[in-house]
Image 1 (spheres, rainbow, N blue to C red):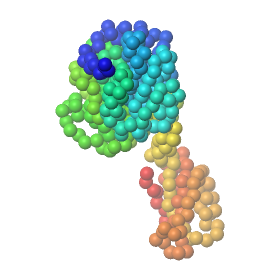
Image 2: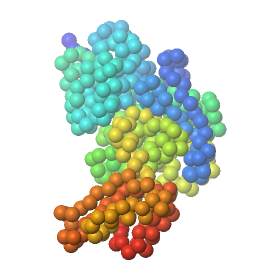
Image 3: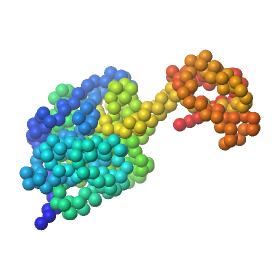
Image 4: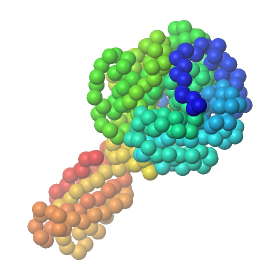
Length: 414
C-alpha cells in the first residue's frame, strides 16, 4: 500500500534548531558574516552581510534539505524522495541525496533558469519540468508520490526543514549577539521561520523583518489580510516567487516577525548590481532582496543607525541575466548612455561625431544607422550611439558638446 505525505504541523523549537546545528556540523559551510562599510554608508545603518551564497550549492537551502534527509528512516531513504523547487532547494536536496545515496526526483517549474536545472541534474537527480510555478510543480509532485511511493521533502512547510534553516541565525548571533534587526527574504517562509525562532530565543529584543518582491506579494497579503495583485508574472527574484506560503510557516511568521515589506523589481536589480560591484559577490534576485528593502527610502528611518543583519540567501543567477543587470545598472547611473542624433548622410559625418566624443573622453561601444525606418529626409539618417561615460556629469558634458556643434541629439531612455 502506497503511503501519502503526512503533514506535520508542529512548530520546531529552539532545541530542534540547536540539534539541527549539531546535525549539520561538518557537512554545511559556516558562511562568513561580515560588515560592509560602503553599504552602511549608502543605507545609513550598520550593515552586516551573511554570505549564504557561499554554500557549495550557493544557497541556504542546503541546511533544511540535509536536516530533513538525516531525519528519514532507512526504509524511507530506500524508497527515494521527491521535491518541488524553482532551483535552490532542488540543488540542495539533489547534492545531499547524492552524498547519502538516496534516489531523488525533483519537479521544477518549466521556466526555471537553465543553470539551476543543469546543476540539479549534475547532482544525479531525476528532473521533471512541469508547471509554471512552484505551486503547480507541487501538484505534479503529489501525483508522483501516489504513483511511485516517494517521500516528500517540502521546500519550506516542514519542521525539520525550518529547523535546518534556523541554524543561519545561530551562526549570526554567535558572532554578533547585539544585532538590532534582521531582514530576511520570504518565499514560502521556511528561512524566516527558522531564523525568527532562533533569533528570539537568543535575543528576545531583536526585530525580524521579512521582504518580498512586489511581483509576488503573497506572504505580505497573508500577513496583513490584504489582496494586493502582483505587479507582473515575471520577476528577477524567482527564488521567492511563491504563490502559496506555508501554513506552518505563516503561523510562525505571525508570531515572530515584526513586519513584511515589499521591494520593487528595480530596487532588487539595483541590489544585485551593488553586491557585485561593492562586495564583489554574486547574488541572485532573491538573495539581494534584503538589501533592496534596506535601500528603500521608505525604510530609511526605520533602520537608521541600527545594527542590521542581511541574509544573502542565494547566488544562483543566470550569467546572462547578471550581465543584463550590470549593464542596466550602468545605464541608470549615467555611465552607459544611448544617444540619438539626426545627421546628414554624407561621408565623414560619423568620423566627425566620433572625434568629438573622443575629445570629451567618451568611449563609443555601439553604432547603428537608421535610414529606412526614419521620418527624416531621404538624405538624412538617425544615428544611435551607445557611449561609456565616467558618471552623470560626464554624460551631461558630452551631450552639451554635441548640441553646441549643431546636432539635434537626445538621450534614449531605458
